[in-house]
Length: 443
Ligand code: ASP
Image (cartoon, rainbow, N blue to C red; front, side, top):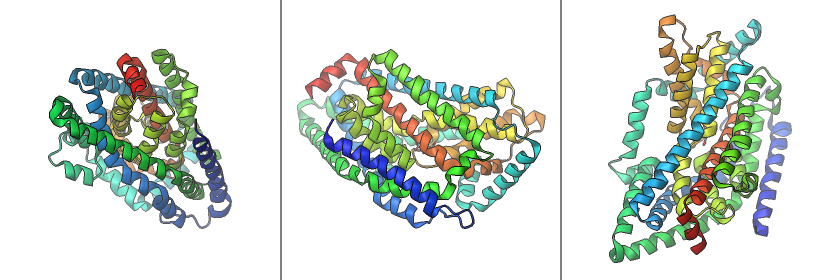
C-alpha cells in the first residue's frame, strides 16, 4: 500500500471530523437553519461532486468496453453477467429482509399519541415547504411498479446513445458498451487497433481519476459541514432517534456481518482486510452521498489496492453503481414500515411481503445520487397502499415529510453500504472465476 494512499485516507478522515465540528459548532443554528443554497454546499459541489460526476460517464464507457474486450468470449461474459446479477439481487433481498425484520421487531413508529401527532404535523409542514422534493415525490406517485420496470427496460434499450450520455443515464450506455466491446472482441485482427485504443483510453481515465481523488479531503470537509450544519448531531437523540437507530443497526448488520460472511464463504479471502483496502471508496461514499460520483474512486481502490481483476471490476462496478443498492433497499423497507406504524396502520404479513419485493425493485430503480432512495420509496408506499385498498386505510404521501429532515445522515450510511456491496461483488467475481485470477496476474 503506497504512502500516498495512507496520507490521503488520513486527510479524508481528518477533514470529515473537522467538517462535522465546523458544521455543528459554527454553522448549526436552530433559530436560523442553513439550506441547500448555503455556500458550504456550493463549495463541496464545485470542488468534489462536479469533478467526480464529470468523470463518471466517460469512465463507464471506456471501462466497460475495455473490460468486455478483455473477457472476449460471449459465453464467459454471459456467465459473469448472470452471476453478477444473481449476486446483486440476492444480497439486496437479504438486506431488505433484515430491514423488515428489525423494524417489525423494534417498532420505532409506535410512539405515544402526543409525540406521534407532533411528528405527523411537523412532517406534513416540512413536506409542503420543501418544494423540489415535493415535486419529485409527487411526480413519482404516478409511477406504478409496472411503469417503473418498463422505464428501466426502455433505458436498457436506448435509441440515441449520445442522449443517454448527455442525460447521465448509465444503463443504456452500459448495454451499448457491452455490445460494442463484444463486437471489438469478435473482430480479431480487424479491430485490434480499437481494442488497444480503448484499453489505453481507460488507463488514461484512471490516471485522471487518481488526480481528481486528491480533491476528496477538501470536498468532504465542506459537504460534512453542510450536512451536520443543516441537521445537527442532536437529532440522533430526538424522536426520530429510534427510527434512525433501526436503519443504522440494519446497515451495520448487513455491511459488517452479512456481506463479509458472504465474501468469506464464496472466496475465503479476508473480508475485513478487503474492507480496509476499500476504505477510500467507502469514505468518499460517506462524504458524497452518491455511489455514482464515488464510482471512479471505487474502481481505483478495487484495482490498485483491493486486488480485483480489471476484467471483473471494469464491468461489475459500473453495473453495481447503477443497479445494486443494498443499503437503499434496506432503508426503504425500514422507512416505509416505520411510517405506516407512525400513522397507526398495522401491516399484515402479506403487506410485509409486498414491502420486501417492492423495496428491492425500487432500490434497483434508484439512481446513485443523493436522496434517490427517498423519492423511489413512493413506489413501495403506493404498492402497500393498493394492497390495503379494501381496508380504507391509506398512508398519505406527505408522510415522507416526517423523515425528510434526517435523510441526509442516513443517506451517507446507506450509500457507504451500497458501495461496499458493489466492491464485494467485484472481489467475488474476481476470485470465483479462476481464469480471471490468471488474467489479473498477467496484467
Ligand atoms: N444516495 C444513494 C446512492 O447514491 C441512493 C439513495 O439511497 O438515495 O447510492
